Length: 336
Image 1: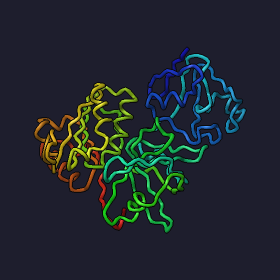
Image 2: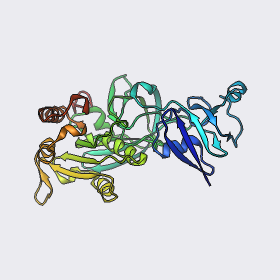
Image 3: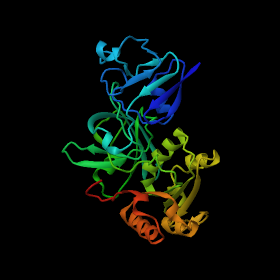
Image 4: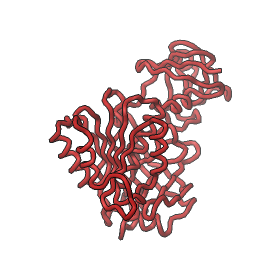
C-alpha cells in the first residue's frame, strides 16, 4: 500500500511505500528536502503536517518536543504516513540554502575507471549525511590545511557514499597519493558542499550538457538527479575526451540513452586508430549540431580553456548569459 504526499508551497506530489519514511520517499523521487543525520537526532528535516497523520514506529524522535508535535511539526526522516498527507516543508532550491560543514569520511571504495581516472567513494559517519545539490563540489582538507576541490559525481537521492572522479595529474601531490598510496579504510577530512553548478529545475527549456574529461563527474550527478525526478525536458550530453578509452563511463551513459533519458554524443579531440564517432573539439560539435542554442539551458564542466571557448561560441550565437552554467577547474600540479 502507498500513500500520497502533497508538498506545500511547491505543489510537488509523490508516493510513499508501506514502511518507508517520508524523507526516504522524497529523496527516491528526486526531491530536495532538507535533512542532516537521517536518524531523528538533529531536527534539520522538520516539516509541518497540514492535513493527515503520521506515526513513529521507533517512538517519537528526541529532537521533537511535545509542543512542536501538538502544532503539527514532524521529523520527516522518521515519520511514516498513516494515509495521504499534506506536508509544509521548505525544499532546497539554491546553493545558499545548503549548510556548509566539515566531516571526517572513510574511503570505502577505490575503482580505477581508466588509465588515469579513479572512482573514489567516501562514507560519512554512520549518523551523518551531507545535504547537497547535484553538481556541487567538496574540498578535501589535507593534513597541513591545504585544500583540493572535487565535484560530487552522485545525486542526492543516492547519498550513502560521496562519489568523486579523481584524475591522476603528473606531479600532482594529492592525486599521486590517491593512485599510489591511498587505500580503503583511510580517513579523509572534507568540507562542503560548495558551488552554484546545479540543475535549474524551474526552467522549461531543454538542456545541453558539455563535459570535458572528468568534468563529466558533476554532470553525471545532475543527469542522475533529473532522471530520478522524472524531468521530461530533452537532455543532450556532449562528452569531450582525447580518445574513446578516456570516456571512462561510456557504458553508463549509453544505458541512459537506450532508456530514452537523453541523447549522447561522444567527441574525441585526439582519436586513436579505430576510434569512431565525432572528432574535434566538443564545443564545435555543439555549434555544428544546434542552430538555436539560445533556446537551451547549457551546463558546461571541464578545464577553463574549454569552458571559455564554449561560452564565447555560444554567446556569439545568441545564448543569453543567464542560461549558461559552468564548473571550471584547472589541473595544476601545485593544487592537485
